[in-house]
Length: 169
Figure 1: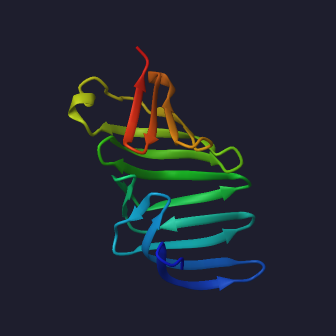
Figure 2: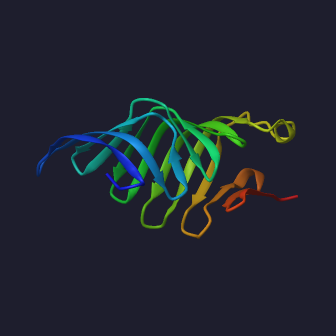
Figure 3: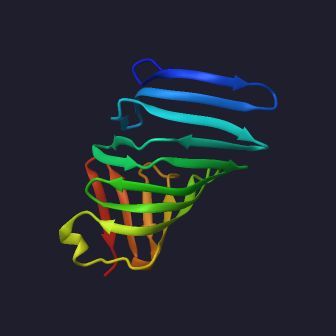
């Protein structure tokens, strides 16, 4: 698909009223994101003005050398928003959680609802316990992605050296 960055197979139907594509990605290495599965099966289809992207198997990768695992998921576009429904995500040294939310493509910002949060690092988890869902603001409009858990006054930024966590008080 993209030399040295992505490869795979593509099959499906595209016409003026219907989009139904099945894609298997065998290699992906874009923007410091690297696929580690042997293959990643994706489906892309249209429903009215919406586009639905689905993945039927768990995917494993790395983002800036942090191992990331995503459960099978469905993303849906509505105008300029991407809606996420019941995706389980795990970031190696940080946390795992169930994710629902939306992301605005025009502003590069979004709000995620995090359920069933488990902190990975025992040094941090002894101080934080999440018994209720949390709201996380995400912002990719700046050079370094930023994630904010407003109820805790906490922000997390990706840097070239890893993760930077700021906690108020």
